[in-house]
Figure 1: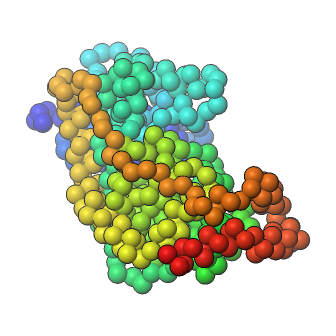
Figure 2 (figure 1 turned 120 degrees about the vertical axis):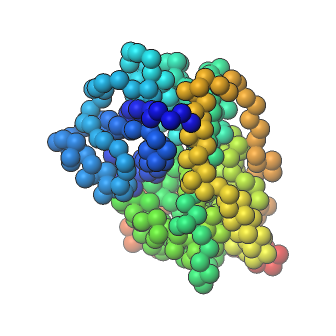
Figure 3 (figure 1 turned 60 degrees about the vertical axis):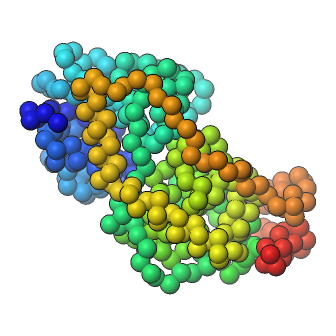
Length: 409
């Protein structure tokens, strides 16, 4: 790296408490600052703060101390060597800056998927056509941007803070934890809850923990909602549980990588977006139905040897994928952009080569009418409806037979 310090301007969306996306951004800003970059952070002005002093205080309360200056709004002042867009509506702002500035797009998700087909969807798509240099978290995003927009993209691996997320030797419960974020549609809260309802019926002794959001969710079975947790509390939860459920309908979350770093086997859904980054030895990908997801969870719960194998494989996979390594890869990508080297199209293979887990034979015996009845009953949370629903579940032979087969296998 050159001895002359680069000046970098970062364009960030408004803060969101508990946001993993903001946390990732600030980790990389801090790493660049530690390696000679002078970083200024411009935050979307939506009434969260009155001035830069308030911004710093809010940022540090949510994400910790970061070696940077804060500015309210996107009025970029002065000259910079690098500008970094971090959300689709900042890409045009970055593209419009004049002067000899390298324009980088720090991409953490395929944001068109956040919207129905319409203007916002198309504007988000257009953000990849603004002449910026994409650097993505994970392989799938880089592959998609190259494939759909013919724009060369670099990536850095999903990593985890292995100083926090690690095996502690804590005694485990028979438990499943689910990162349940109903405000983020791509995290499929209702789908996960429907799958866990099946698991809870078939194995009533299993403890179910929800976490990840302050929002209240309608759940009709026994569970604990832990809401927002610190990273240390997350690691304690992962060490206490036997299976982690994290559903991603767009780019994978960092959560499953943190789970497997802590030795927790993970279930997610089998979709193109998850096939490039999730390791098959530590993660089980299921067809995107409640029945199949429940089957994948039960397969792990009911087979201790498989659970142990997945746990050890996940820890081994993440051992070299530390936060520092991910930040180093991002710094390396920035260096290639500033030096104008190594920014061509690249071949990115899929990592996950196994078949999707599907619902077992017994689960497939359930008729369409029975599943529709269960889905309808799950929307009514009155005491009478809960009693009726429990009676229906207990008298369903197909559901009982799933557990019987798993228990005897």
